[in-house]
Image (cartoon, rainbow, N blue to C red; front, side, top):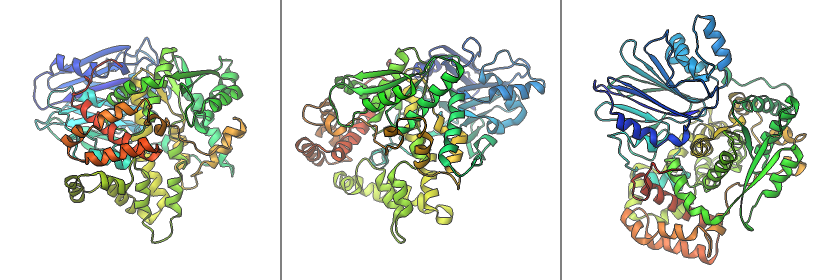
Length: 604
């Protein structure tokens, strides 16, 4: 697990070492165990390492003595590295250690840019090939668990980094928010595409490979699925048993590490399943019981899940840690999470995720198993069912897009200035773009269209981005069994479960009945109570939404935002609180990326 970065330029000059040091420093929190940069005429490749596999080995960037001219860097984990190493060794390749990334130069030498199809894991990889004309090959895993952000400059220089703040440290990469970024956040809660919220900065799409040559724009293509991404055949008619068996296998694989492993539990079904299977594996192997971590706000708050998390821990015999967060700390966490995420995010779950990863790291854990991805893959949100069952003739795609928003369509139109409404009418709203994409699905299969959108775009833009960026903010590797290729392929197969009944069935013999049969519950903090008279988030939200700030930006009408805030103070509601939160989150993000509020390279 690492943070990676690099550049490829048509100019023959060697990249400035001071510039490269600044890039590395902005994502060093994710790779505190080692740092190295290689550079040459027109190119650079660097890595900040978090040592997980073979902590004493694995010199990075990866080079092999018998393959001069090929250098690789890896962010993530390759789970089939042992099998690949045996296969490559049989072809004459030799490796100095058992680190998973060490085999990448040999795998690339054998398979060329198609090498990523052989990888099973969560990864972002960059391979620099200097044997003939220099070329850079980038690849990310099928679900986009590990991100790569890039910028192709007017001078032909291509630059990439794991995190946007690091990319912004390169000379020539500007922090210029897109004009439509506010609408995107209010419509979708976060940027949901390969186009980020910053002008000129792209995100390599899930399952994509990019080929870069000096002075040319990157050629990005989506890879066909590899063998490990194909849907396994169901063993029988019991979807719950099939899913449980797949999860059992993947949890056991992910629970193995050369560093301490814990679980994060919300008190819900998905994270409870992961904890139960990790505990089962520990008992069977004679290992100590796993440690589970749950975060709760100090005091009495609506929707608290401490009792459910304790139930899971008692039932599975996990060693439970109930982490208590002082609500007074939330305003400072808001700034830190915004900086680490790099893009605006209107989901308040980011605050608690950041604090939970911090607690795991402070307790000595480097790897955490989580339940992320279960909702998107197993049809948890009610909006999927509503889209599938909408009557003929109804605009199901627009209705679905409206359910994604932090702010309803009519309220957005009421808040926007006339100039911003006119701009969006000419350019198109983010919600309209989503609806058009859904309507264009082949065969008119609504469920397939929505599921594809949820997994290809919403999942990496939301839960996976938060797990990666906020986990790595504290040098914790988040491992997600539900996002393993076999589990995802089973969920997305035409004959797949498609709803939470499979998870209920999988949990029947593993969790307390009250948890195993429970309907999906929101895991976000109680915004209505936090942005209310006396609430700890009221003052920072009010400051970020001051009339002077909003008037300068010119996108929303300050007096109407003020009226919305007044209504929230008089009659607190989750809907109004989320709308205010989304507006404030975008405003703070704008300040952070422009360096107006805090330096991007400050400590976690």
